[in-house]
Image (cartoon, rainbow, N blue to C red):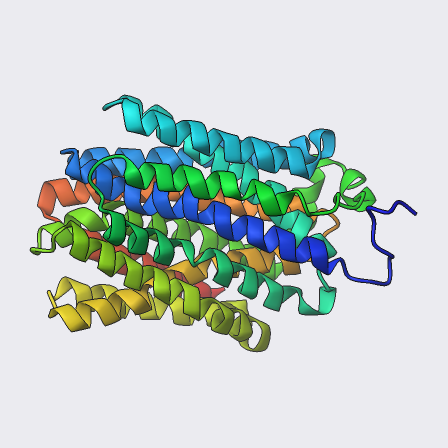
Length: 385
């Protein structure tokens, strides 16, 4: 047995720890800075709600080829190289954002999304495949809790260093590059013979679709992607129209991210004990209520508390989709993670475009109306299934 491979009866906790660290650091740079704070930075450059919507859409659109290609590339390059390629794409994109203008920001958004997609599917099936099967759902919740630190850390750093200038972009590059250090300590992924023998995407899809938990995960992914991308990408415009300055917006986004950080493990617990449908319906119903409260222009303390709840619930949709991917009993977990992630990203392309257009046509309050409508549809469809 190779010295780089742990005994079959032992869990490879060194690699599990290393991969969790890679996700945590890279998520701050790739998501926290790019997806959460760069739209605020671009708003300060004078971009309109519609332009910000297109930029947010470009991020999620760019993810799709990365998500689709990552399982194939992992089989040929190895998961480690795929993760490194994803990190490199994001670094180049952040450098581009610092030195180009509109509409070239969209190309940088596509490249950043590609890097996010490659790292996402390159790393997560690697992690979940070596995890204890009996605790896989809880590990997903724990992992999502760690990466949910990104929307907390990034706005907090932005509030400290300021959003003007290029400092916040260099912070994103620094966190992304730093993820290479723990990646060096991860052992090579085990050979996944079952995945290679699963017969490709068509056969994998035919195996996954009959399972109810996969279909529930697909519905949650489709609705959740629209909600996360729209709220994260356009909240700066919504809050700015209500008198919040850039520092206050960063603080509100920190509250949003803190909710995502602290509520993912409880959501995973609900999915394990009450089922995907109940957990998803409760999260969606809570999202409707939180959006309604924000639309009523609450005072500052209520706004912070509501953003905390909204962040936890919206972040939970991705957690629930990934739990569905890992719990669907098919031989190729990478296909499950990739397909539900593609569904999430595809819908996330639509979210900011539709919401941004509605905000331009009717006013910034349309963001919360869009959020409430999509979450309400999710509740209805989940309870009908």
